[in-house]
Length: 105
Figure (tube, rainbow, N blue to C red):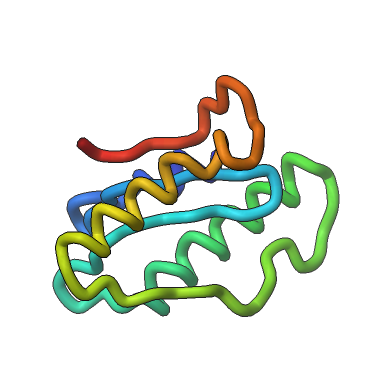
């Protein structure tokens, strides 16, 4: 469900380069498009997925932390490192055959 939400507006509101849904957090490398801001994109992802996850889990209340960590990528080398870091995150966490990772190549 989270992976589907990430891809929902790829190419319209943002361009995805890599993502990884981990058991307790998510990593995404993306570029906002047009007048979409980081705050708008994250609000959509967090609001939509929190509501859906609470329904699926039959619970209510807060789902995601209020804060998030963001990092501005300044050059091609840093971009490649960020994509590799996201793609390798499951392996580094010793998650075998983890399906919830996608790096655009």
